[in-house]
Amino acid sequence: MHRVKTGIPGMDEILHGGIPERNVVLLSGGPGTGKSIFCQQFLFKGIEEYDEPGILIALEEHPVQIRINMEQFGWDVRKHEKEGKFAIVDAFTSGIGSAAKREKYIVRDPNDEMELIDVMKEAIEEIGAKRVGIDSVTTLYLNKPMMARKTVFLLKKVLAGLGCTALFVSQISVGERGFGGPGVEHAVDGIIKLDLDEIDGELKRSLIVWKMRGTSHSMRRHPFEITNKGIIVHSDKVLKM
Image (tube, rainbow, N blue to C red; front, side, top):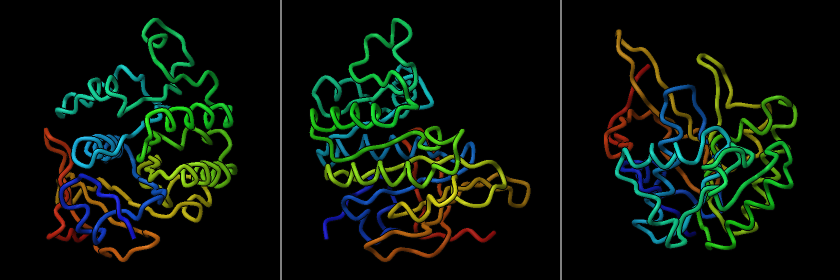
């Protein structure tokens, strides 16, 4: 089995070698847990370290802001966009605004699943993307939660067919149980849950792999930190709640 390296220090050890190719993984967590950073790091390191082009589907943040945020970690994606190794699909602005008009891939109506899929496919095929991040998939069914599983399964079918390995960022509220939408845990191949908890009067970040189809993985909760160079997972440590 071919595995896709995450590019996140410590993460591949937890996954016993990486994410199985073509898997769609739900990256679930509450606010401040580092979901977007995890997703962006996966895409950027894929290009820099493994020469695997990637696309990011932006549903909750302006593409300009995403580029600025990534630069703060030293991830200059603009040069990779020029080289045709990275692309942002703008499903946030609906093409409104002068900055948005400069974007190459624009989804005019994010609520139109087929338009989103068509633009996504166009971007994937043009740059030969191997990695895809959707931030966040929750936006697609926020007002229609009962469609969550169907939406996720449809996207998974398309991405797997195109040979991509994907991370779907899934938002949950503080204290919420589950993974962000009824039935989504059954529609994806893997789930990585990111948490931010108060322990002994201090906020601590940790993650746990709830499932990963096609591979064994650590069953323990591991602490991680967000540094100025991205996320580092301490695979040799266990956080006890």
